[in-house]
Length: 196
Image 1: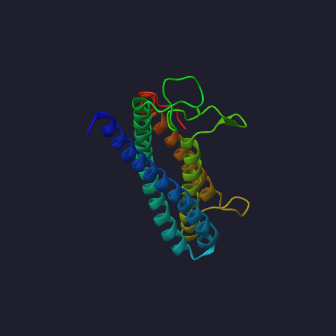
Image 2: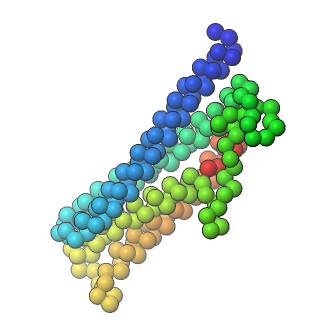
Image 3: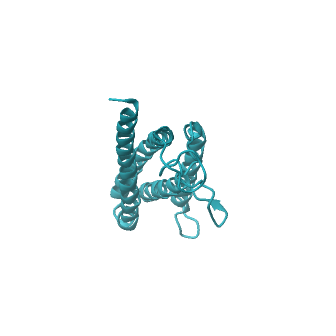
């Protein structure tokens, strides 16, 4: 087997791995917020003990899936970088600009687009989904605790569970931002485009 054949085989295997990463990510993105939303809508009104138990389990599972996603992002970015390098080595033709090489990954658009001034990138979208989901589970858990232990109310409302859910969600957003900065080097290897 020659060098080009080895590179083609490497490209096929890396592409298959990249597709499996993307597939797993989208399956989780469909399941995590759906389950959190269903729990928020149904378990919150249940018995305080059930709400506390289900909320704790949901929060822990969501946290575990979030950690899995953060590691997954590292592997995803490494596969992306390798795909770019292989496309350059294989000399795929460029279709957008006068470049020596192209390919679906090498010519991926830069992450410069915005939505009301907010740059559109995968890590930010993932952070919003996981922050909202974990916040919902924290609310379900703490609303149960507040009922079990008769936490004080403000204007007849349980604001402590809401505050804890907001703080938990904000910590997740900050954590995703820190993680994205830590793995930025993966995207800078070779010809890999800016984060998306």
